[in-house]
Amino acid sequence: MGKTSLVRQLPRILDDSEGIRTVFVDLEDARAPADAIVEISLETRSLLLPRQRAELHSSAWLRRLRTFGLSAEYSEVKVQVRARVHSSNWKRMGDRLPANLTMGSDVVVLAVDELPLLANRILRGRGDRLRAENVEAAAMCSSSSMPCTGI
Image (tube, rainbow, N blue to C red; front, side, top):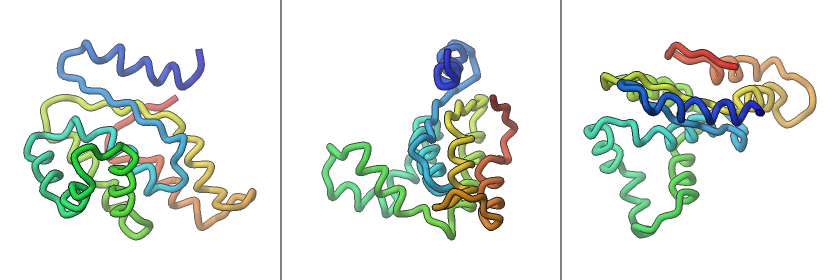
């Protein structure tokens, strides 16, 4: 059994536990911290409290998205969300995620796959060498204000 299979098993095992909500997040396609924030945001939107969902649905970006019609594809939603998250605000947007997810009484478990792959991409940038200026971004991306355990 590979790492991805193990990570995918966690939500299945915990879904039957009362008071625990789980979400699988795959960061294989993420190339930058902002991409990770978008992936986590999209995968965890079902965990938001009704008030948070209402705020999301009333946001300007979603109103623009509605112009595409109600049959918007996941990829179109992803493009719209990604347009809002960029290099100057990804830290702030990422810092909001734990607060948004922990407002309810349930414990939230994020089963994140390919985080080391993303950290390596961030560290190396566009070349093959580790770049000192990318160390902070990789550290921020792989840390969280939520307690976590990883494999």
